[in-house]
Every structure is written in structure tokens, then in C-alpha cells.
Amino acid sequence: MNYSKKELSIIIEIVFIVLFAIFFMPYFYENPLNSFDFNDNAGKMIQMVIFPAIYFSVAYSILELTYKNKMIQDERDDLINSKSYKLGYLLYEFSFFLFIGIIASDSSFQNSGPITFIIILILLIVSLIKSLFHLYLYRTS
Amino acid sequence: MKLLNTLREVRQKKKMTQEELGNAVSVSRQTIISIETYRYKPTLELAMKLSMKLNFKIDKLFYFEKD
Image (cartoon, rainbow over all chains, first blue to last red; front, top):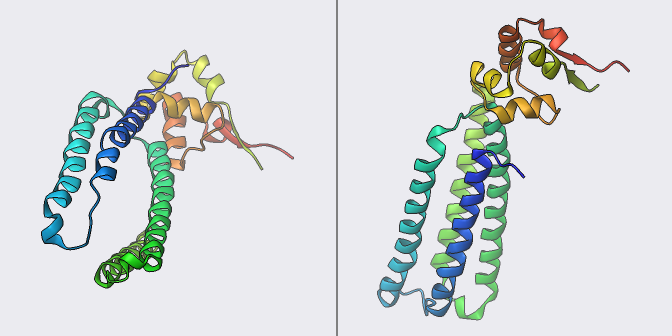
């Protein structure tokens, strides 16, 4: 079966994500945050943020250099990207709500009011920006 | 009403490959394949570019299936 450069780059992207899941997720699972106190968990939190950031930066840079610069970006790509981003956005939103549900129902997280508040606030801001941009696009397109 | 096209026939008549036609209108070969196999409907802009590049009337290149 023949694959185009774009399809190959997406397959490589999937491989990067799977490799990340195989190598990093067990580490994060074995070293969970014991509380939401930043001072107790600063090292772990930095690792959890920095490891994936470095990993994905390197991975996407390699991908960009290998394939994406040589590819033509056209209207079909825009349509496909927009559809996949839409699905991704819906899944992110759904996972956020699920996460909030878990936090709200788990007794060990009962004292994590500020975290729940921050997550809800982020969701609200994201939804507001999305709606404003949606309106802007309708007004200007 | 289904939107049909004669892109493949016209392109072959003009002895152009999908790659050449794609480059001529700044789209990928995959986009040309998708249009020819009815998996993608081009925008008016792309349809006009294809029509101009193939020197073929746009309403003959893209047309609605008759009921």
C-alpha cells in the first residue's frame, strides 16, 4: 500500500505518541503526585512538564525537517485539519469534564477546590474565546 | 444532485500527470486524485484554476448529475 508524504508524517506522529505512552507513561504512573502542594511536588511537576515538552519538541522538529517543509499545503489539507482539530477539541473538552467529575467525586481531592476552580475557569475562557472567534469568522467571512 | 467531473479524461487528453496538474495549480497530487475519485469537492477557486490550466470550460469540467 502506498502512502503519501502527509500520510507518512501522520503515521510517524502516531508512532511518536505511542513511544511516549510506552516510555514515559509508566514513569508518571509510578511517580504520582501525592498532593497538590507545589513545594512537595515541584521536582515531579517540572519533570512531568519538561520531559513531554522536550520530547515532543524534538519529535516534531525532526518531523518538520524531514517531511513538512517539502509538502504542498492546499485547501484539502485545511479541510482535513479543521475536521481533525474539531474532533480533538471535542475530546479535550469531554476529557476535561470527566477529569472535573473525578476530582469532584473523589474524597482525596475534596480539598482541591482551587484546582477545580482553575480548571473550570480555563474551560470557560477557552469556550468564550472559541465563541468570539466563531462570531468573528461569521462576521468577516 | 451529485457533483461529477471529467477531470481525469480531460487531464489524460492533455497528456498531463496528476503530479504535473497538481503543481500547476499549487495543490498536491493527492488532492487531484481525491477530486478525480469524487472524495473531495474543490472550491470554486480551485475549480476555476483547473479549468484555466486545462483550457476547458468549467461547466464541462464540473457538472451536476442529471436526475
